[in-house]
Image (cartoon, rainbow, N blue to C red; front, side):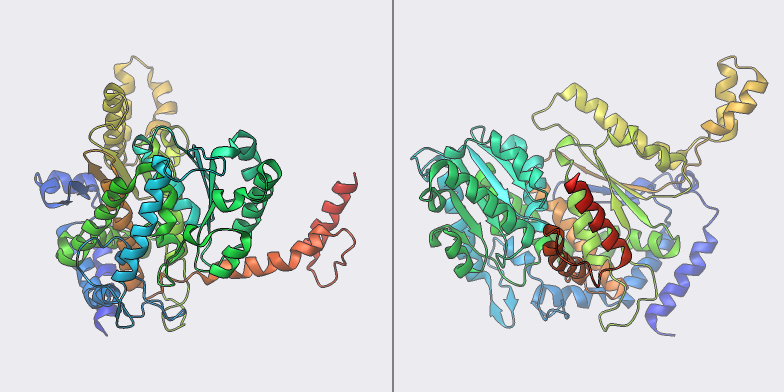
Length: 546
């Protein structure tokens, strides 16, 4: 039996040993449990005391990490080794937030001179737009910025712009368009002052179907309203396809690039963050990068048992593989982090939603949990019923700031109370005898108690983590994103899968391109289509005629 198999076997046996031990039992046995089950770094506190883990559990999980050669694989990631074998690439998004002298190598070449040059070019442009030095075709300062992208080119900037709204210049409005559904752009265009709107087209290859469809529609709207000459002044691009961008009509000094070792869902740190940089300014954008860099240092330097990303990942593995919990919730008690769960959905589910190992063999364990979430307290009035009393157990990450940012302090105290109460309720629960005692105290008759009490029982023993920080700033947002990026990588190491490719999105794209002309032409033959697709297209044609 190899070391990994032995570690798994030990964890399976341990899981049976502690099956009847509740989280409340663990607190009762150890008055200092919080002291030993939290980690702090850079102003972030990670509390993992409300989990179904003992010191023995953590020791065994760390054995699994070491047996999986986590430390060696982490070193390979940061050294620029090919960690994305299906595409033959390193994954060096950490270089994008590297503000110090540290070199990052890709195939033996230090990429930092290029990264620094591109970053400075992008930030200079962002500052010039923000200050009004760069103006629209009508020589007016820009008031509206429209980011056109999809996936990582949309989720990242859109999430961060909402999260950091208090830091966005008050004279700027940031908008984000992604869906190929014409309603996404169509609903926005009538509200835009086109004479002072800057469009940013984000597509590495400048061939992404959804992005280019929306970009061409925006271009038509601008040309029809203000003339062809406005395109060069009011469009810019984040792309590496210089010829295609030039053909679109975008000037060369308005094109910002990034590299093939940057995956879309890891690209917010690059020029993909241009819309965010315009909104919050170069200094705050660099603070955002600094937060990510700070976590990179923590991830590479902290011992595994005090390493927040490692602990987050191991807890996820513990529940996914040894307790068969298939879902994971992220609940930010911060309305401005409303898009953070969606951002993490792509990061985690696109990265680790894999069913073959690095060498192409079928995986032998479950990978990638289903991730979802909404801001608290909204989620409490939507799906927390299932989290508290449902048959599925869903581990949760709670995120909350100790102090509000541009929000009412009295309301924030209530928000904090709700966050802390939910994690306590999930852990503690309420027994049948406790419910009966409570109902008797209210004077309820015994027969009524017997009928009602079972419905008010909370099983408890439901695990959660809490990430606490002083205030949601650009630096803290950078920290949070980087923590989850490294969590995803650690889990991929343990599952022995490639977290940096995403071939699962390809087939649907190919079929959409094949079907588009058939759907668009009512006379196109339906030969060769499956019965369902053919039947649906036939009905679409009937609806059109009707």
